[in-house]
Image 1 (cartoon, one colour):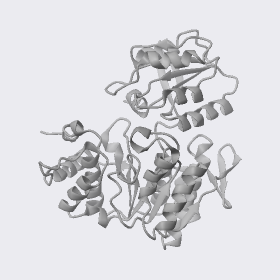
Image 2 (cartoon, rainbow, N blue to C red):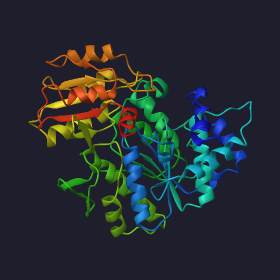
Image 3 (cartoon, helix red, strand yellow):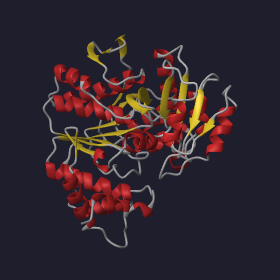
Length: 414
């Protein structure tokens, strides 16, 4: 019997091709399920996943049936499509993919991302969700999720340099692609942006007559409590950047309430408190030589995310030796990431990312060795990198961090 994984794998050969013609045709042949689902559409360089997690958790706490669509997955395709934080079942994913397959025309073969996206729309419509929180895959304007003319709210979390090969090599160009999710007369919620990106977003909102809310970050009452517009709430996710991410989520909920939704302060408090998001500043355990060690996981797959991670470890572990186990894709800003993460006294263990196009390890080593006092180590696989990190002159007080790619974090969790 064919599996969901096999169906999705069969479309991998069609690569990444941004554009809306194929997905629009696919959805039309499915009866346009995307028009049956009220959505919040979320774009941005960093923070998208966290904001989606906050929003879905808050809306669940308010009693709504909530769809959530995010990417990439860490371990299993099913993670991408959730209702009330429960992954789609194997049977339902297979059924949705087979339904999509049944309408594909040989002369208009969709990409893998378009197939899973179409399956998501069909599944959410069939399940009659009250609302769906939809994360863009890449960019916004030509992303396969960008097929709804009337989102309840468009959200732009942040803009920095990532995926420049496809989105443009300036913040203004990248912002222009993200701004593609802004629709006429539909409200927009926007996090803190660099000035040149903010100008592009502001202009697009003005052209679309879309009311725009610029979000101020929440503030810390104490390390575990945040305050935003008089509302106190606990922060379940780690890192100072979650002050802005949670503020964006709360501003989005405020806009929903303005539209007649019923989300109480109690639901907000409970929802934020119960928010979970794997692979981002996540503590886990690694066993080496029959001994358990604490390990910190984080994607940190672009320069801005690397800066957040470094800020976190310096603030909470200021006098501790940092040991980095890092793998990166060939398409990333390796120098920018390493210069944001590394300090001269750190140790670095470079590993490949299985089944993905990793950067040449010697390239990473050369950049790192310009920063580090101790030369970086090349390791043949993830397990070897972790074993070396936890054995080479390791002290129990040392902090070991696995980062550089969500695919690498997923490999560890798997």
